[in-house]
Image (cartoon, rainbow, N blue to C red; front, side):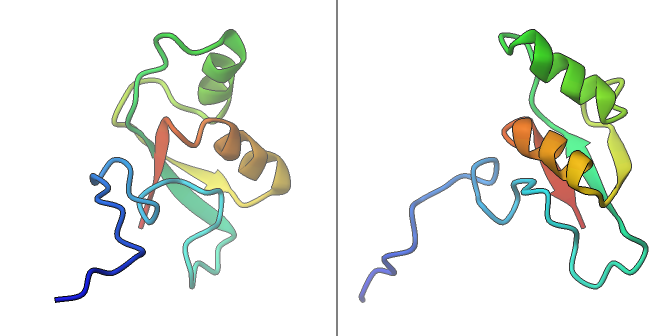
Length: 87
């Protein structure tokens, strides 16, 4: 049985299709997308903490709906290792 070269043995937390990339969900006509805060920002720099707060998060596991604008996409990209995109 041949092994798929694209299989990297990633866990669910590391899987690329689960990470928030800043791209809106396909077929979302409202110009918004939803993201969920899943990793703590303990040990992160102050500007990353402020970015999480700026996105509207108050607590972990919270889901927020963000406008699909270049500035919000940049904020999500900055903290992409702390959040995931919700379908």
